[in-house]
Each structure stands twice: as C-alpha cells, then as structure tokens.
Amino acid sequence: MAKATDKGAAAPKVRIILKSFDHSLIDESAKIIVDAAERGGAIVTGPVPLPVKIKRFTVNKSTFVNKTAREQFELRNHKRLIDLSETTPKTIESLSSLHLPSGVEISIQMK
Image (cartoon, rainbow, N blue to C red):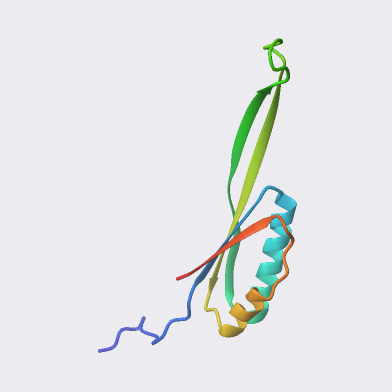
C-alpha cells in the first residue's frame, strides 16, 4: 500500500534571507526576487519582515571635559524572509541572473 504523500523526487525548497540597513532597498530587492520566482513557476511565501535589530552607540562629544555632552547613534538591521517551494531549474536560473541594488546581503539555503 503506497502512501498518499509519496511524490517521488521532491522539488527543492529554497529559503532566501535578505539583510540591509535601508528598508527601502530591502523592499525593492524582495519585490524583484518575488517577481522573478513567480515568473519561474515557484510558489512564493513572503516576504516576511523579521524583527529589526537595533544597535545603539553613545559617544562623548569631548575627549576630556563636558561629560554630559554626548551624541547617540544607532544602526538598524532590517531582515526579510522569502520561502520558495516547487522550484524548477528555470526558477533557479532566473534567480541567479538577477541584478540587485548594492547594500543588500542575500543568503540562500536549499533544503
């Protein structure tokens, strides 16, 4: 008796994580990736916004005196998660030939 879930060789699932300091760049890149994946025939889940990591730095304005004079800076690291299922070789090829804006880090995991 065969199981209903057996389909033979399953198509690889792809997880794409985008990281950037600029939220507009990351949203633009996510839109480009989703459009290319849908044209390639994959089922797209996302982009899912992940929590923003904020690093704050406080620096003295003066090196020796005026302890109360300080400046505060912060770095915001935005992340987006995109899952692709039922990918085809055409999908992988279209994703590898994309030209994305600089300032966006992309990590791709095949499952």
